[in-house]
Each structure stands twice: as structure tokens, then as C-alpha cells.
Figure 1: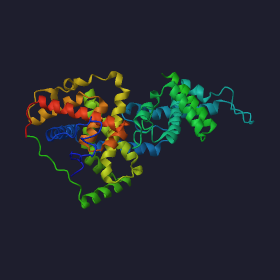
Figure 2: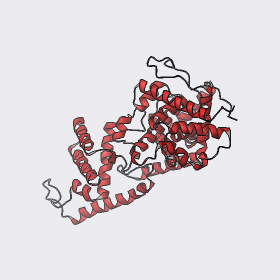
Figure 3: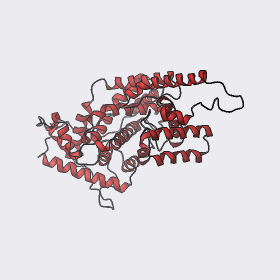
Figure 4: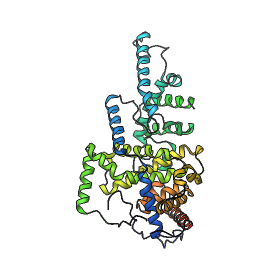
Amino acid sequence: MTDQDFTRPPREAAEPTDHTGVDEGRLDDRAFEALRCWATDSSSGVADGFAERVLERLAAQSGETETETETAAPVTHLGAERRRRWPIALAVAAIAAAAVLVLVPSGSGDGSPLTPDAPTDAELALGDDAAYAVLQQDARRLLAQRCVPCHDASHRDGIPAALDVFDVSVEADGWAPTLSESQLRFSRERLVDDGAVASDELDRFDAFVEGQLVRR
Amino acid sequence: MLPPRSTTQAASPGQADAAEALLRAAKAGDRDALASLVCRFQNAVVAQLRGILAPAGRDAWIEDLAQETFLRAFGAIDRFEGSASRMRPWLVTIATRLALNELRRKRASDRPVDTVLDLEPARAGRPDTDAQLVGQGVQRALASLPATFRAAFLLRELHGLDYAEVARILEVDLGTVKSRLSRARARLRAALESEGEPRR
């Protein structure tokens, strides 16, 4: 038997005389043969060079991981266009941050913010897509630390009902819109309950939530 | 003629050792080993995705989600603690979840499930061979089922996962899995009967 074979599964003790009476037993030979033929035919539908394309994407991901910061967005499926925008967004965010540091007078040295006029994370998240993107990536990281494996489709113990709410394995900006407003706020409560999240991280999470809501 | 029935047999010790060595090499990041894993399992992954997605008119997603399945698996392969024989169930599990998640997200724009043959004119044409005829029967049966039923049916009948595994993956109880399988089998039998006598 090779891994490419479609072979008939062994009979289970539960079939076909299950007490519920709903399991009618195995496929007969003819039906199984039809299914196997369909599967063999169907699986040939992918164009040649599939393995090469997978490895190219894998290499691209690895390259991005090596060159980008921790907050950069890795590859996402159905999202090549979004992926291409990430470097631009990060560059804009970096320039904006540098401009704030250069143009705004330094703080008073008493621990107060640099300036009363410096935009907060929440303000940045509301109007600045690049700033919001960074906050969203941080929020994803926080949730990934605390919500795997249930909310991770790539994990064998991911739970479908949990994945319906959000899936941290969906990267870039695809994971957040599936959360309702109440779920977003509840997820924040979970982070608080966890007790391991610093207050500034919670502030940034709050900013992400507001930024996500205004984009709906 | 239908292809000859393959026999179910366990991998020989040599094959099992080779598979374990391949898995170890893949975990170490060996590119050739990763490519070999793709080649070994791509048919299983693609068949699972096609069975779930094609009846919803989402053929265009198949290659992309098949790639994504392997990328996610390789991204987590250092956490994979099973033996090489568990690779296929693991991969079809990832593929199933990706496919069902995509269908949930795009549910509002899904086409009716019974239009699969309309969406695939090349396949819907007059069948030239017995295999095509049988394939249409299988597709018709799959198209008459909800996506979660298709997923359960394929996980069990095509990939050999046991009932408990299917229940865990789809987060339903064992009785639900059995009822879904029962309905799917009945649909397949009916579809094949409508195609006439089997060709052997």
C-alpha cells in the first residue's frame, strides 16, 4: 500500500449493527470502487509541478520570516495581493513613527507622554491603516499565545466551532473580521483573566478592537 | 474498465522505516524530503478538497487550499508527534478544516449544491468511459449532500479514519457521524444505480 492509494477502511465494530440503527454499514464493493475511481481521477486535476509550487511558497515564507520583524505578516492563502502590501504598510508605519520622533518636541522627562499631541495607539488605529496593521498583528500574537490549539486550524486539536469564531492560523488581516463586536470584547476579557498580559499590551489590544470595528 | 481493486495491506517494515526516515528528514527541513511528502500525499489532499469544494462550485480554490494545507503542515511539522502513518490523516484533517472554513466564510455567495455538473461542463458532458460515468455518479451523490456530510463521508470511506476521529475532527458526536455516513452511502448507492449496471 502506498500513501497515494485509496484503500477500503477496515470494518469497525460499531457497524453495521449499531444500537442506534442508523448506520447501514459499509459501502458495497461497487460503491467503494466507484468512489476510489472518482478520487483517483479527481486527484489528477492539479497541474504538474504542484510540489515545486508548494516549496516555492514555503521558501518565500521562510525568506519573509528571516527578513521581516516579528510584527510582519507571513503568507496567507488567497491573499497574495494583501501580502504584497505589507512591506509598504510597515514602511509607512516606520516613517510615520520616525516623523513623530523627529518633529515632536521631546518630553518633559517626568515620565509623561512625549507630547499631549502625540497620537495614541487608539487614534492611530482608527485612521492609519499601517498602524492598525501592526496592532492587529500584535493582537493576533496575543490570541495565538492563549487560544491555541482550539482556534488554530493547523493544529490537530483545533475545534471547528472555535475556528468559526476566529482562526489564528489565518494570517494577515483575514482572521479578525470573523469576530463579532461582542466576541472581540470578550476575547479581551479572556486576556485579562489570563493575567499574563501587560497593561500596555491590553491597551494596544483595545486599540486594535476599536480599529477593527471602525473598518466594518 | 474500472481500474483493478487495490488490496489493503500494511506497509512492510522496510517501507515503514523509509517513511519514518522521510518524516525525520522533513522535520529537519530537508527540501527533498518535503517535496517527497507533497508527492506522496497530494492525491489524498486534493481528492478531499475536491470532494468538499467542487459541489459548492469552488473548484478554483482547490489548488490554493491544497498548497495551504502543506504549508500549514510544514509550518507545524516540528510539533507533529505521530508516526509517518499518521501523516495522511493529519493532512486530510487540515485540508478538511481549511475547506469547511472557507465555505463558512463565503457561505452567502455559495452556489446551490446541486449545480456541480453545470459548473463543470467538461465533466458534465456525455461520458466517454465507464470511469467518467461512475465519476459523475459519485459527484452527483456528493453534490446532494451538505459539505459537512461530504467531509465525514470522505474522511471515513476514502481515507479510512475511524468514526471517533471523524467525530473529533468535525466536532460532532459519534451518532451524528454514523447518521451522516449512512445518508451519504445511501446517496452514493442511489446515484450509482441511476447510472445503470456497473462496468467491471
